[in-house]
Length: 383
Image 1 (cartoon, rainbow, N blue to C red):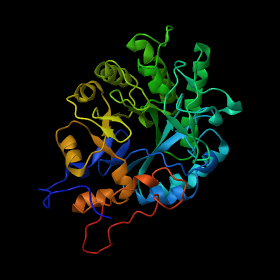
Image 2 (image 1 turned 90 degrees about the horizontal axis):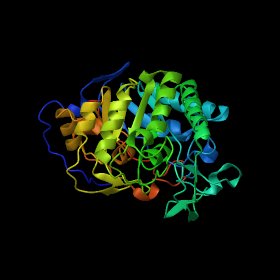
Image 3 (image 1 turned 90 degrees about the vertical axis):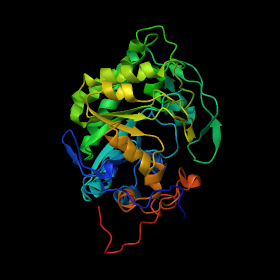
Image 4 (image 1 turned 180 degrees about the vertical axis):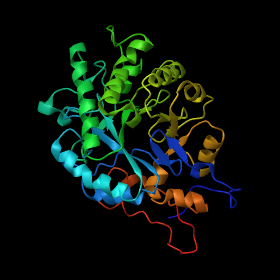
């Protein structure tokens, strides 16, 4: 495997990404975060023991990891073999995975989600339509539960007002179960065109009730989830991921800057631990564009820890930290391909290429736990 990232031979002294940071009750030894990555290896929605090796490979003492998106209920699914956290069996299955990460001295949050309309009736209890903010159908193809066949996304039905509290309760149950499984906290998935984003984005949400129309109304349900989960497990154990500028799964917004700042301001009132924003240049999965938009206004508006993600390299991550544009930088594809990514950053070592074709296969090893570490050499410093 070669390297797609070019780094200068001299890091010029201390590396901003590798400086300590205190995030609420968590004393982090560095600022390189494992981003949540869908892995499709939790057969039957139950986490498998091979995940213990995968996550512990990427754990460092004082590091911060965010587990893959995990369903809050049996209506939350839309991808093959993604894990859940709504049953006792799932909670028990997560426990040894969390313990493996904690044994390395790292902190571990679980990302909890509901995909909303990004689904097919094959994933839904009784073959019911998926739920969303509206009945607008997503174009394109969904990967079916087998992981092989493709099918159309199903037309969703708009949630009734009196059904929304049940979805809020589902997020609370997921958060409570995550703590029972040993996780240090949860990250609410409010990005990438999934259910909470389907309420926030005006290209999808055409409601005329208290959950539609104005920015305040469109953000009402996501903020209700944040408030309830914060009360359930404590705000110091809660983060949220947002992609106001993103267009994943046809989720554009007409004024993403206003959405970014509104949410940052509103979230500050709940004193949650962190917000995790997707960079404006990232419009969809593997799609990046040139833009003059920034997260500066959202950064200024939010009072807790600030995290960004979006194809960052070692250099751009250092720049983000050094310029105080963010406190933390989440790495996805590069952390997947380089389980010892913080150490490679420390040594300015070459990076393994990631293999896109194996991102979402169901194999328990290939493209999962088989990416090589740097050769262990005693004279090299360790992290």
